[in-house]
Image: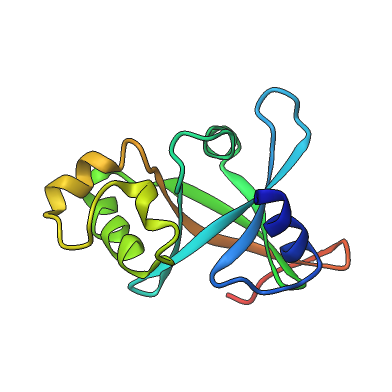
Length: 145
């Protein structure tokens, strides 16, 4: 399934809020690309791990930066992992807005108390995304301030 999403996203097909995340492997140093869901909450962007402590999560923790591609636009991003207290309302919003097919991965409903979401953050890490620069045609251009 991920291969199909990756192929469609790579050729520029928009699928909801999915993007391609390319991050350096923490052991190999080689770029690794995977489809991810991008969450927007209170004017900020976040990456939420739908399927737990995956390789992209461990690689992103190690690298602290990646390239995020949506349609034909790529941007270099920096990320900071968010603590459980701050991540809980973001995770709740994500579960509320993500397509129904993805919700069962979370084993929680959007009406659960925030304390439940705080416990779920250990299984579903949340990263705040900030834009470092835009990448166009292989050349890097600084994003506007």
